[in-house]
Image (tube, rainbow, N blue to C red; front, top):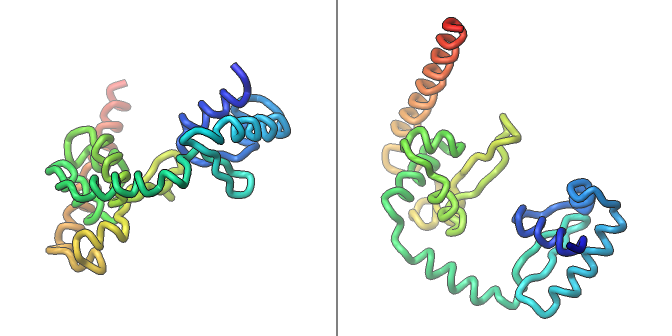
Length: 190
């Protein structure tokens, strides 16, 4: 397999911008080799539906800009569909908590929320940011599109915002206490 094929697969797998240095580090090749392979990959993609997008030394595999109208129409169609009960539950948790990790959401809902979060991200109703407390985790937060969709200017305008927000924080604290107690009991048993 050629280096440009490996880079194409890596960029597809990651689905996010990578620096030339990071690509080189992952594939254990020099920066110059990565740059040469990226030039080759860009040429191969010239008559395809994909392209390489660059911002400084960061590169990402993306769809061609000419496909924008098609994808915008698909996005509008997706946004016009009604939200499922599970999506609404997940949105409520994110909105009323302000920011929530996937484990927070899963704990509160009692089920895996990965698919729901992906759909809400695609619809542009939530955004994913790195957790400031743990860079290995992500937090999900409401977007301005969500506020527009709900017809409010600020989350605080939502019904019973203060009461529900406080209840979610309390639930989170109870969960943390249970985890700590469970860990203490496990240590005592051993």
